[in-house]
Image (cartoon, rainbow, N blue to C red):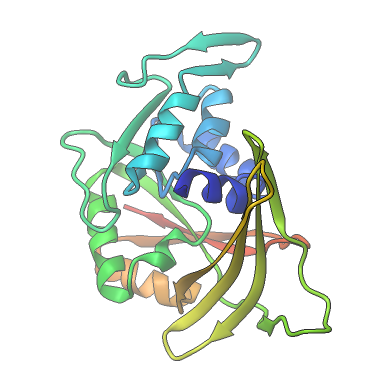
Length: 253
């Protein structure tokens, strides 16, 4: 089920794709996509002609990404890809805090959609930064998307709620509705109501909670400096009616 919900909640987002393509054009490939999920960014870069290594700790998400990358449209040509090869997509199941890709090096490592804020605080980020630096080429760039601030809200009876993300697959209808963003001393808690309706009309409802660590661009730059990086500017991804914007911190090895 993780594949379906990942697609429902993240698959339609595209506001940041032009930024990742721009960075790949500037720095070259291969690109390491950390927290790749089912391939939202990886497959977009592959279609643009870049070689990508997609890393995620969820084997189901990576399996779906590998299946989808088996046929990738590159420019005007359709390229049949052996996903175990180096071009254009290679898949890896690993934790971002402790991955080891051997001798593979990348001129660009990207971390889209606040993945770095899912690593369990400063210690988890420090582990990731060590791994990322080890796998960057000399002078390579690490680009990390973060949400410094989120709009807080809670849906209550009688008040309008955000529209749900909806997807139909094999006769099942999946709906995921944001119902709250709360703040505590550690960061932000995002709550969603997930509903599944079967072809026979049976309905199941469950709650999903995601915690994002509190993190600022300046704070990430300080942590990165301690890990041997230098700051190389920032880029912004504007908000949409459905998604918060991001600050993208660029770091040099």
